[in-house]
Image (cartoon, rainbow, N blue to C red; front, side, top):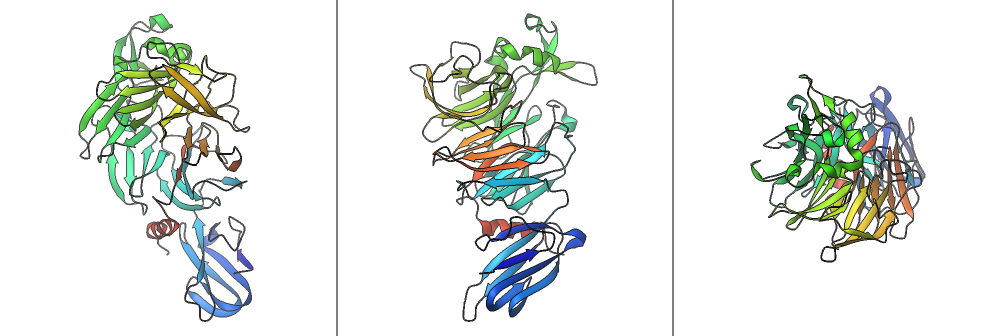
Length: 467
């Protein structure tokens, strides 16, 4: 094992013999690497090897390129390798504080959004390992959003379209790419303009997608708005492998405008002006969809609620949170039972049938949290089972995710702030990931069944061939 590995300009993380992957900045396109061992062995740096206790070399690298340091004793068939990869100059500043054993080998984020980010700003999709090392990244010419790993180890992410939900010129789309960056396909909705909040595989080669279709001549005077307004509804579209529409659901047929309730002042003040001077209002704001057998679990920010939809009938089976409707569940065991969700995001049904939600608690005089409920549809109840918080997350205006692993761990992207953290099943925090000036809309853990470090390294090599 090396006693030291020194890299000009420093490296992340600081060298430890048991850690194989490192990143560094490469000013002027080069980096000096030196390796030290206690006893002479065959030391290799970027293919140049010698039998020695010390070896140093200046290696020319461009962003994304790597140098390999190898150690091999005489007679050993296998060598030990360390990988040093060069970061792009504009790679987002991050900090990883590990305080336990992370539950997953990899974590995907897209730290590309900020309160001042423009829809044309470039951004990154990044996979960190459990040591906080960015072992894979893709640089997009726009802010990527909702990044995820799909079955087969391919990646998907949306182009952030800002608030231009119905503006085709600035329309969002999902890119599906190989790990080496090759574009497989662009996914768009066949009707309306695609929304960037979620994409979910339907298990048959197609996808569930979201859109915000406009609807004219809506009377908003009961809520303090104009009598003749244009609103955007929330629509779910299912497309097949060929991109054809095979199923659709629209909130206008199932969710009353009265359910927007406490959000009306913000909705009415936050319309986006269009060139023809009309104004669109967003009273529902869908932000997640999750297939669960013949049902869909959806989250609507501006109704403070999560719904289960029957795919066959399109009807709402139950409603969790928000105003009281005939489908509303009675919340049990939750101190915030009167209004359990505030602008929620990322509602999912997990393997045991329970429902997880990222509760932003927006405008509710309490911090955001990750929650899990057991739903008893027959009894009409939702019982709180878990309530996970982070003392550094005190407010969450938008965005965010909460994912519970099969081992009971939780991974949260604390919406709207540059913080991602994981909590083990026993409640102890395993790590915090923070960014300098950007945040990730969601964070997802990725297991070895979908990715391994060798595959990620090879993909990076293909995407960033050494010059």
